[in-house]
Amino acid sequence: MPFAVDPNISQNIVVVTFYPPVDVEQDHRDLLDESVRRLGEGQSPLYRVLDFRSAYMNFSDMIRWLAADTTHDLPGAALDPQVRTVLVSNSEDTDRIANWLEQDQYGGLHIPLFTSIDDALTYVTQQIAS
Image (cartoon, rainbow, N blue to C red; front, side, top):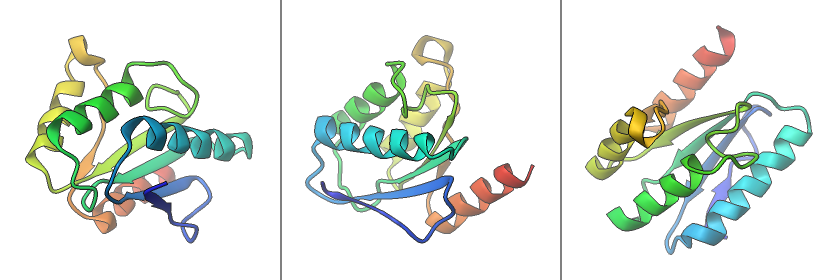
């Protein structure tokens, strides 16, 4: 599993840092399993902070990842009403994809995008407090 889950974050926040090589299908299944496990422990809503900065995913893999996470109504995925997804990436491709996902024909899903973990966690903390 070329990603790490930070165990030192609040129970209803999971920070996932991806490392190469990323296996889109397997890593997505593993993340869904982790999300479902946390939801089963009563950690809802669950904020998933997905850090792709070190993953070096190409555009095609990023599209496949986000499509898998946003086009299927799977427990623990972005469309799960108990899950809030936040992206961290330095890639312009990720920014473009996040903008596409907001369009109705691509799901109308707002996924905040940040360039640093600190900014993403500040956002999530503010969302939890409100």
